[in-house]
Amino acid sequence: MILSARFRRNAARLVRDRSGVAMIEFAMALPLLAGVTVYGIEAANMAYAAQIVSDIAVQTADSVARVRTSISEKDVTDILYGVKSMGTRLQFAQNGRIIISGLEPVLDSSNAVINHKINWQRCSGALHQNSSYGTAGQEVGATGMGPDGKKIRLAANSYAIVVEVRYDYQPIISSNLFGPRTLTALSAMMVRERESNSLGTTGTASACSTYSA
Image (cartoon, rainbow, N blue to C red):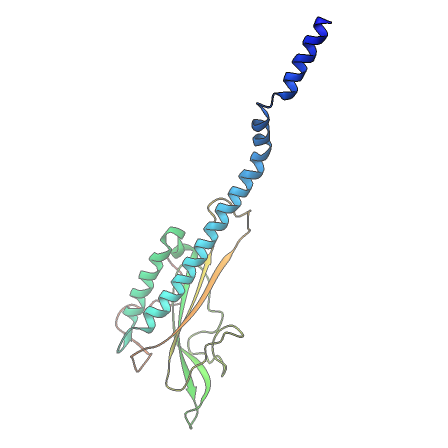
């Protein structure tokens, strides 16, 4: 009887003792928690990279469009050098590409816009990627340049700077989480204050045939 009573008391204490439950629950949840944390970190880094790619596109288009009076090869090359530094943390220069197109309207005898032409194109970055919308000297159509539904269309006697940016995303943990991703951005700005959008020959050209950081 004494042994039976002692057994019952010990059994009751064991049932009430939950001192190790939290540790067991944490151990069971740890793999799931670690997985969610890893995905969260990679997703946040990808969102950051996408924002930088967008910022590079906007800053490039704005900087080239606002050069006053006239624009030269040196102006464009200096701007490209500067905007690439925005992606230093992402190793953008090694894994990205900036494509700048100088877009102008093609007019008929009555000064109506009948087409659009890429007057010149300059590039920078080691990623082997060409423009999705045309090359220098090419006429791209009366509806303008760019993706369907978002084409840049010009009025007579106006010019635009169209910038395409692409970046092969470099994961900080593993590419197995989201797979290979190429982040893209497109930006366009109207040329301000200069009467011609042709490039002067001063400086070194950032040729689109060159792929280097």
